[in-house]
Image (cartoon, rainbow, N blue to C red):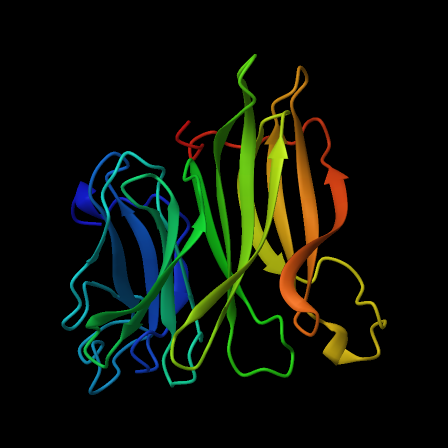
Length: 275
């Protein structure tokens, strides 16, 4: 990347946000204690006439393609923002959901749509949590028979509980966001308070176990959510929680199983929370 201004503060996501057939890499970043943005770069498969890759070689990276201008999120002293791409609306291109902190460090989710020239428009914005020390985002299609994706977000931070004595616990909000055809968003959430101060380190979607109906029925391959945390106990441990999502009952995540990872499992602290 050409300058430090393009610094990533979260995992990149991949989509085709202007429906030209070229894969785009989207990430949220900037300055962890100041201005934060959504960035885009197109990755060319080679020369593709009438696209941003019209004169490109294989794997050429076009930063700020076409008329794209980085999308500013609210700069603050909150944690680093996150972004995920998916087919959230019934149109031909992918959209981007950005998660970031507002002026009170409460987590917000903003839906962005892009036109053929990569110009961004804000479609909607909703709150997804009270804390932003850690923010993560991912995409899945929980409704096997549906034609749009859903987004998954995590926001986490320390919450003060009790008055005498004052105690700190970690407040974690896991959200599944579904989208109406007009862009309206609904967050289906589960919140936990934990005195062991778990620190969320990872979020993923996928099928992590055999489907309820067995492997004979492909419609049972409904994605699950995996959240990895470090429990800051006297002897820290790494834990992965698996959540099920049933779109017929609602999109509210339901804890399915908890798995303690081997003691020699190492987790990087480079992208830790902004506590």
